[in-house]
Image (cartoon, rainbow, N blue to C red; front, side, top):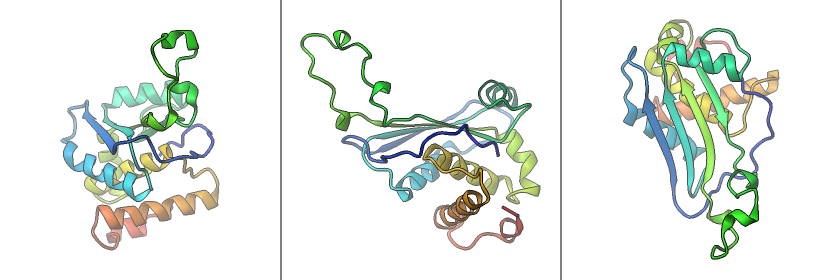
Length: 196
């Protein structure tokens, strides 16, 4: 899995008035994807990670050529990868406030950061790459896609695996979330044998 570029850890996981929303889009045709199922998993992960209020996350399933282009353009990677995470630093008010107060208009009050949705970011997954990796990684395509969704969301929320300690902590949290939200119990044998 491709680590995202360095960024500060997210300070807030609470948006304005409302509930977290996950937008899932299947933009590829190589592998059948159950959009509703993966949306429910993503919502469960956000809840378990303490995301509350109006928050938005996108999960996009894309073709090999699309993820290859994203990997090369934004991550300085080469070739396709299985998952990319693009966090939005929603705590930065300049991301939602007009840069020039004159653009707000005379009849509009100053924006209230507490009313703004928390824009978490995008998780981009390539099911075709996941299918190729699954036998040697999570075991099944179903488990591989679940792992990639959890992994990508954890990156969007500020977790990383750049150091050995971070990798152990992230792997542990992935397993906890998958056991609670995907497997409904202990990890399958194929997953337990995988090295972090």
